[in-house]
Image 1 (tube, helix red, strand yellow):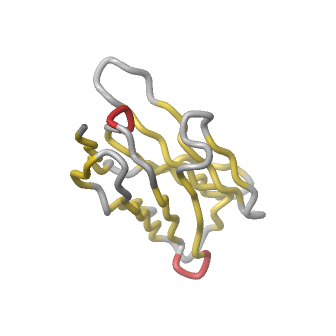
Image 2 (tube, one colour; image 1 turned 90 degrees about the vertical axis):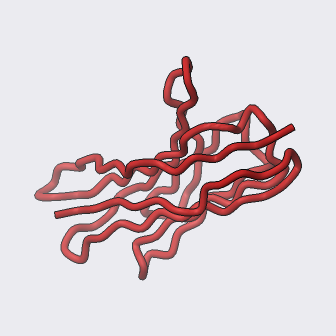
Length: 119
């Protein structure tokens, strides 16, 4: 059984910072990648950042230079450091882990953590 649990959301003023954490509970399977997505009412779910097993990273254009994704492999935990936050960053942030089982990568999602940026 694989569980994904996010934490660290909250309310912050524009220009402020937050750090999100996502812990994946597995000691059996390897994790190929971990993503942060976000979703706000009336909008499609958006890939914010991805970190792969080789530690290469990808960011949405809207967050480049402001957000940083990092990973502690020993703890199966990924972080999203969010700086210079804007009201348009307000959303539920969801973590997705790509877990390899028998040669197939499966997606496991957390329940999300709310980030609200006030103007």
